[in-house]
Amino acid sequence: MNDRALRVAGASLVAAVALWAGVRLFFVHPMGQSVAGIGPIPVPTDDTPIPGEGAGAEWERVGPLPQVPERLPPFTLADRAGKPRSIAEWQDKSLIINFWATWCAPCRHEIPLLQSLAAEWGGRGMQVVGIAVDHRPEVLQYADELKISYPLLIGEQDAMDVAGELGFESPVFPFTVFTDRRGEVVTLFVGELHKAQADLILSVVQNLNENQLQLPQARRSIADGLRGLAPQNRG
Amino acid sequence: MKALIRIVFVAAVALGLSATLNARPWWLRGADTNENDFLPPDVAFQVGSRIDGNLIRVRWVIADGYYLYRKRMEVIAESPDLMLSKPSFPQGKMKTDPYLGTQEIFTQQVEGTVVFARSDFGAHPLQIKVTYQGCAEAGLCYPPITKVLLPGSGVPLPQARPHLWEGAAILGGALAFLLAGLLLRKGRRLDDTPLS
Image (cartoon, helix red, strand yellow):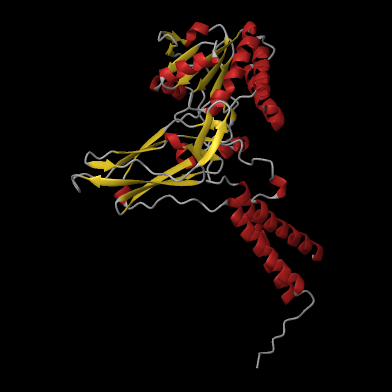
């Protein structure tokens, strides 16, 4: 092998190492670890790939996801008047359960949207329920200020426990659980929800309620639809 | 081969320049590569403390795209014999939110200091309790986090990682330098004659 071939081989090796390091720098998260996606968290189904196996590459990418239950767990929390209210009160409806707190700016951003969703979809068998994980006085004051008209349940550790039952041991806020009218969890959306996303999810839930779709199809349809929303249309 | 070397050379120069000048290459500007991920709270916000004379230094290292609210940061005594001053922080950035108003926030890294005194020195390990709360720019927040720290344990303070693009700039520059050398040497043969 002559000098020129050696130089080219050496340069290629350096370039390959630099390229590999560059790609690592570009695409590995700044702190080297990611947990879960902002957006819908997959609800495990029979055809959900097992993490770390074959088609489960996406699971590997996002790491351990919250184990979202198939059905909404039963729970009871105090309402604005301090009266215990069971979520089963709304069992015949599709629920939009929004977990929020007054100290969370994106949660505050969502409230006008939730108010409009309650008005727009309320007549179609959908019910918005807010769960404030916060101190009662602050929640009551803010709810009065914004004239929140949908039912609000309020709790601190007890509300955190409900979040835990939905698969979040260390919850982030806001997050919103969408169920069908049979009480099955259709999707759990993490982060601030925008109108285009909410409309997409609720249209699919409506189709599911009208038996035009099966649950696994509905979940796939939501996941694909949200991925397909252009960033400018998410808001 | 010549064309390939030129392409790699141009790419390396572009990478180096864009990383240096813009802290993000042109093809990723305007796109958030991590917008679909959120970090566990202890990765988004790392905290540590150490004793420095009569001060306790508490340092938070905050991941890119995340921030802490100044008014939600507290440092209080946990050991029964420990007395602490109010924590002192540098000036943060002001962030205005239409629903939350204007708040002082910290990004990247912040160090607070408290003056401490002990009435029963050595009887108890020195323990402090820190509370903090923050959010991600991507549109979510973490509940308040409370931790008990041992500033005298000798554990070093958390360090901010060098910015992602600093490494890319160095790599791009080094690669460009190497390839420029290769191109300039093209057609020349090494002269093995020793210098006199």
